[in-house]
Image (cartoon, rainbow, N blue to C red):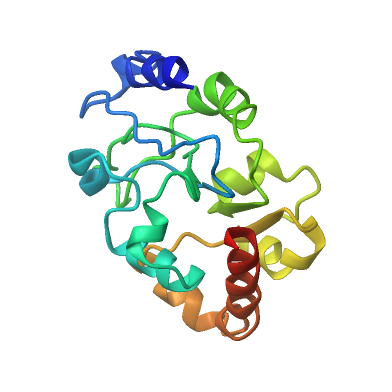
Length: 193
């Protein structure tokens, strides 16, 4: 595992496309029981090198009902984004937010890392990029996918991105907090027990 993480840390696969430079952000240990597959590090995470070290991470930990200490214990929680480095931000043309995850990371690294995660009991697919990559029979929208969380088996749970930018989505979908969050907290507790 150490050799693989060193390879990832030294990866230059999409360096020419990363305006802010290469800084893969991954948290992996073969003992982990929960795997979070997110989108890509944002600017703040790129600077700190710590996954979900921002307001999105605060909300995600609250959704899961776990402490920061548990979240950052790689022997319990593995974190593997679709794109390992900060892809940059939109500029101009009325668009805001971060660019999509670079498409090179998942095909190059995910299967190699998943082969090491033999104790994972629960995989959280955070955001549409992870859901489109890992759910073969998926509805068309993120809302439809998350609404059908019960249909993806005991292993996968699709979640919206916990970004504060999704506050409108959360207010329009009160079922998410009323139904899914209690289920996910229970499954997280069981996977970590």
